[in-house]
Image (cartoon, rainbow, N blue to C red):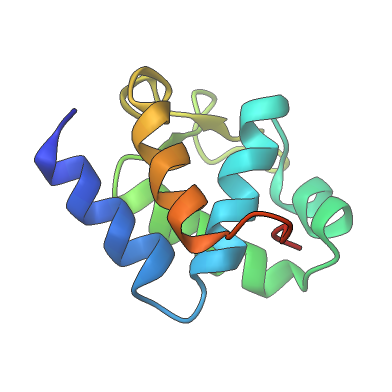
Length: 103
């Protein structure tokens, strides 16, 4: 487990106000690729809010957009996060006591 990734995820998921929404985005992208509009609809969040979180996650190397900035291009989990997804799950579980779900 990467200590740097663990620290980054603690900060982005547990240490900031939008952490729950970022966790929900990561979970959704693990299930399948989405573009920003699809995520906004699926998660019931404002498009601008989704874009803010996507930009932050992309800037920190947790998600990618292989087709570049083309309109409606889908987002994917980065290979780095996919390979270390257990670290995300461990942090998410600590932030999500049994019986309580994000969203």
